Image 1 (cartoon, one colour):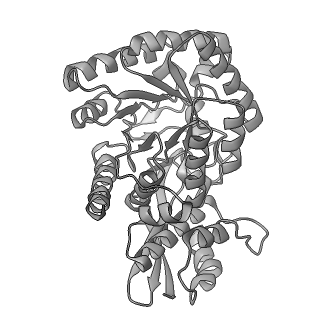
Image 2 (cartoon, helix red, strand yellow):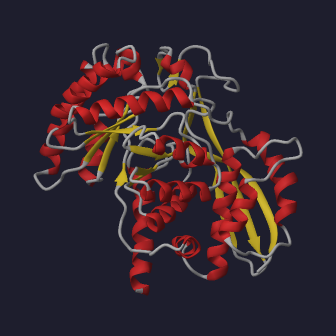
Image 3 (cartoon, one colour):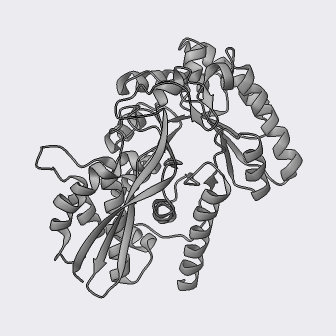
Length: 413
């Protein structure tokens, strides 16, 4: 089946672009906005509206496949591509990508995704990761529509996977409403919570880690109070490098503190994402390698999750080989083409590294739905409920797409 048209339109994401550098430097809140001037290039404010671009591929039989280009909340930080604004990149899709697609036959997802993910622009640069992300979603959808199967089935067929119709644990995040939104997550019994957005030492972690320890203990008690004896979710908290800031990157002290958090969380299992941010990939690998080894040597049952500076498939290989963490967040928009996210999950599983199919609150309903199919085909340890920080919307989108697809797959068995 041929592609007859490619359309690009501006969209909104489920959250906002935030200048992580300015927030870490102590920017205060002004209602929902932040006070002060941005510090990351491209930002006009510390918090500004998240933008996306929908890419629609029109097929010759009238079917329309689509995907959404989107970038993470903290764009421009941690080695990522710069801020993604629709007005800057719609011309790229219309002028450089559409002519390469129109008139082509829809063939193999893996081949087409790889081609466009590696595409070099006339200026010698690769496409922005957000474009590669949304474009390959649309290509996967086009292949699935052409074959009249689900996107999960396309992935399983092309990557030689056994498609087992089993739900993947969903990880819900609270945003800054870390108490009320935790209640929502517990009531809806998500299997992993709460993320927590611990991105400031003074107001969220505590200069000695006391605020986070209090919060972990509160979570443990709240899970028991609202969820009952048979509800045992994993606690997964992202601290954005603030432990390193609070403890001056003293890995022995951080390991000891993680042991305290383990006790506060017990009997629930605890994961800590991004305990330190060393400002570069090699430095981050060495730091997480050292910290992970220290935690294991002490017999502390807390998993270290790598995020910052682990953005590409090559990064995942490097972090895994160094055992720099127990789990890697595969932050889907950062990897560009979704083919890279698929490969990253499969690589982690093959080499005994935990695989977290993540992403960002700053995605769209469509990118979240496509990621559900990636998860069902590759079976990571968990996937993120997205977009947004309101809990209900992101969980509903991911959970419902997962259950609809599982129903179809089970019916075909």
